[in-house]
Picture (cartoon, rainbow, N blue to C red):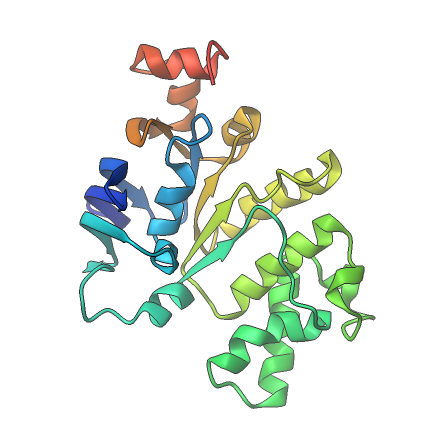
Length: 252
């Protein structure tokens, strides 16, 4: 795939002596949503966190192979890890707003990246909240503590915070698993809108969600990428029996 935004080439990941990911190779197109499915403990979140080197906060880990983003292996020695994490935003399973105002949550990344102009910061905060489909709900209470928002609003705030520093890729680790159906629908609608500007990779336990929102689906099992392809094909005529067994609920 010549137009790959991300190219993963024989990537393996180890926790100590334990091999958590086995020779993963996959290409990710720009402006698509990739759904990652598979049973608990199969390596989904480990793979996701490998894409912005978040796993390195854990001691005694090592990698083999390459993850190439825009032609550059992010595991090269001279790569700036701060730059990688700015370019590749992350939204976690549990919304994690800071104990600050709504405004300061979104402005946080801008300020630590050196932004000082108040008008610039205010404009970026507004744009990010609009892009996260939250502006109309919070525009009159930007100085309110973020913890006063509902769970779904907090998660969209975390998305706005990720968007503020203008990433190119957004990683989402089960972003709707703690939300009610209405809030989940808002997140799913938001993901569809965001892919016009961003490449999105989402881990989900919810098979219906993967089928609804992803363009391509990756099925992980025991640290291996068992199958990867267009979502419609994976869910209607998978190439491997193990994929079919998982999707039809025979295990997992």
